[in-house]
Length: 440
Image (cartoon, rainbow, N blue to C red; front, side):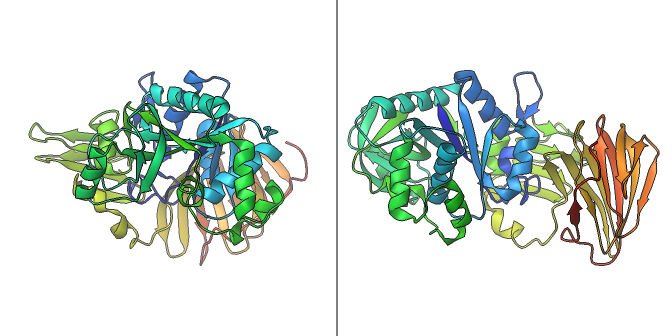
């Protein structure tokens, strides 16, 4: 099965654990099979490979999420990077061109597209395989998955099928309705639109060329910013005559808000947190190394990270986005392909960061024009290269790098470093990369 996972998200509704880099699908808050914690991305990848160990998975995403995907999945998946955001139709077309031109997928092969973050049972992925088989043997050009609604929702679009059969032609599509209209749709047998599609690769590329002027993957990538912002539904699904919908009756939840995310959390508390006996229906997530004590809290969510602290009634937490958009602050924590960083302190003329470098990984060889840096090794073993000179690193070592000094660090074991940046107007743009003068 060729599977494209669409990974987007602005990181607003699960603030302060999510931010512009770490969207909800990357937060490790769900129980895995071994009693540990996993993210929605990790859970979906695990479920897919359990159902189809040979699945070829490609994640379509933006530049900011690439490092996180590499951090959590390594090189197990392909990554098709959007140069800028252009909604789901251009994203799927770019990924389709990537599959053909970079992955060697033939145009008569079947491709299934779905979101990267559904909270589902493995039967969902069995249904994806069923959709792929229908696309391979059926007479329709496009197959969709429709989720049987469990309640009238204003959050989802609706698919109105022609019949109540397990597989049906599509009568029409409906936009996100109000509650009364949603009840009417459900009475007509409507299904939630789960954003899942199956098609032959050649069919999709043909439709892409009808609406966009490009020759191949590289050309579309280079001209991506010129493309019209349009959803897959508007551009293709609602115009296609030969279309079928598969009715899915299994568990399906969108963990898009704190209210719904708490329902799937590994426990009532994660991190250093305690509650007295009068607390009811309250969840706490604490990524800080300080305790949180809750007393008499009812129907609440409390979340703390380096990016901020949320204290909210669960119902009200669904309306967090416009308030988070008013907060102006740099990202204080991020996972990267090489490890992670946490901003510990911000002053007018200094910035203090904790860096965790994974074994076998290294930072770019680089310099800064407007700031000095000091590294203090807190744990692990590694190597530094300072202006072409290599030295070993161990706990307690201190390395000073004045502005203009070329430097890098690599980890032999997990390496923990406190980095202090000193200077005015410290900026991520103040970085010049170089090739190492020798191979490590």
